[in-house]
Each structure stands twice: as structure tokens, then as C-alpha cells.
Image 1 (tube, rainbow, N blue to C red):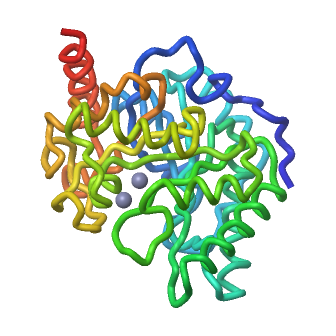
Image 2: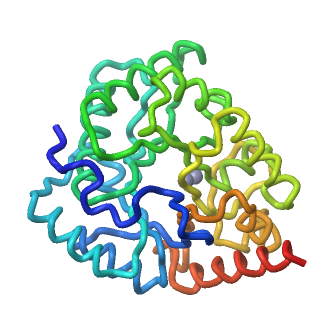
Length: 309
Ligand SMILES: [Zn+2]
Ligand SMILES: [Zn+2]
């Protein structure tokens, strides 16, 4: 399925490579008008990392890209200030779903995202582990395992990053147990990684607002999944109280996590070198802007400074 050689076009050898001792801060940006425009939008927003959708996130219709589109992107990426590109798979995909036609569409769509990811030299495709619907957790997990295995087998050259969930008890992956089990039962290969979202952690009762709380999260990830699995951070403030199981993003510093919380979250020593993108509403609901990215970078710097005292 995938024709791009492994790693071709990837800017960094892999996520978390040794030479970078800072969090690479950026934002989710639009690919409107063509893939290459995402790089320009990232630069306009002072991003070091960008995340994009490979197709319209609320429709099944895939965007048809050609090898020329991929080549043009890789060329522009190589000459840009952006150091990391990741794709977010569309929200309609449910790896744990039971409905056969939905599963087929989900698999085709995720496979397409991985193919685009390999083509443009993305470091991974982020996907949510899925929703139970009417079934038991065990059955849902079993289906998610099968689904992820099939998506990996159908592609090569792009990693799959499983994101921790929030928003309802009906979702898989609210904590790290199910994600660890999912990765293990899918063979535990190097193409499987973890993406954590600050708002989702907060919604699922984790303490993301103090250095001690964040260290406990990092400890748990190390114990359950191993440190190397954590590849990506989503930075979102939360409109809701800790443990509320609601997934409503707020602009950085404007929600329950707050500026002090992000200083603590971003400065966890084990998370330096990782890319981290904002998926916040931004002014007028148009997504994170340059000011938000710069504020986040400032909070990172202040957090690191406070810890070194
Ligand atoms: Zn997220
Ligand atoms: Zn979310």
C-alpha cells in the first residue's frame, strides 16, 4: 500500500532524538488550499511542530493526493522551520466499533492516513483507541487490537500514536492500562507510540497542574508502557474541573489547568525533546494563533527555570 521508502522526508531521525533538549511547541493547523500551506501556517504561528488532518475530519471522503503533492511537501518541509509533522486521523474512526461497514470505512481511512503520513515524512498518525458503544470493555478492546494490527499490517513507514481518551466512561484508554494492553496485544512493535493530551488527562482525574502530579503521570507511563512509547503531547487547557470526564478544550491559561499548570506540565524533564501541539479553540474559534504558541513557549521556559532553582 505504501510506496514511500521508510523514513524518507522525515526531518528528524525519530521523535525524541537526542540533539533536542526542549519541547518542540506548535499547533494543529489547516491544510486548506493544499498540504504545503500547513507549513506556512505553522511558520506564521511560530511553530516548531505542526499537526494536520489528512482529510476533512468529519467526513469519510479521503483527499486524493499524488506523489507530486508528497514530493512538494517534503521539499518545502526540508526548507522550513518546522521540525515535526504529525497527522491526526479523523474523529469518525472507531477502532473498537462492532458495525462491519463502519469498521471497513474506519480501516480504509486510517490506512489512507498512514499512507499519507509515510508520503510526507510525518512522524506518526494520532488515533483515539475507540468507543465501546453497546459492548463490554473486553470485547471493545479485542476489536481495537484487531483493527490496529490490520492497519499496521496494511502499511509501512509511518508510526501510529494512540491518544489517551476523555469525555465519557464509554471510551477506551481513559488511563494507561488499556493503551498498554492494546499496544502489547498488537505485538508491541516500534511503530506503536503514545500521545497524551493535557485536557484528557485532567478530565480523567490525573493531576497535570503540579510538578509532583506530572512526575506521577510520567512514572506511570514508564511503568506501564516504557518511556520510549511516549512520543507526542497535545496541549489543551480544560473548561471543566479535574475528573469531570468532559473533553472541552480551552485556550492555554484560560481554563482549569491555567498558566501555572502548564508551567508544571511542560517542564517535566522526561518530556523534553517531544513535539507538543495546541488544539485549542483560539480567537474566534479559528484555532491556536501565534500569540498562543508564543505564550505556551514562554510558560515552558518559565517552568523549566522554576525547576532549576
Ligand atoms: Zn488531543
Ligand atoms: Zn480532546
